[in-house]
Image (cartoon, rainbow, N blue to C red):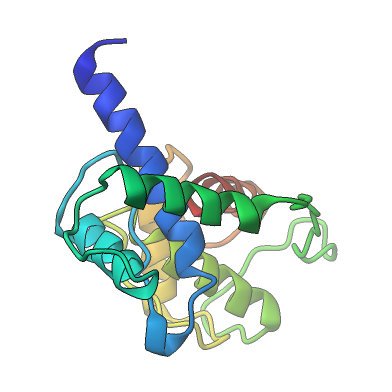
Length: 174
């Protein structure tokens, strides 16, 4: 592994820790979620500055030793005892179920939420507002997600697309 790859890997870890902590902070003390892409950009710097402000560290937007150690310790604290519990929420009937535009359900709301969570990683993904209604923006986001992952770009959420969406969320949200 060369120096650039090591730096990118370290930045990915930093982003993963910040992203996890972003789920645990409250509105007044918000750490904005960042993509886990290995690129130290303005979003990563802003999230790191927010972390430093919340934890009473000098706000530099840089990961000095004190910031890194506290960030890792907080991430570990949140991760201790975490157990992955998988719940399959994909509709079981009919066997060939796919979503259709206009459908309204809690499953659609979940899919929209997952799409909105990973959109920080996928710049080409159109924004989705979780409403529970399978609308045109949701269909467009699913179609683009399918295209990115070499799935048939139908815009319909089938079992294969849903499984890939869950895998991508689990990978980037950790």
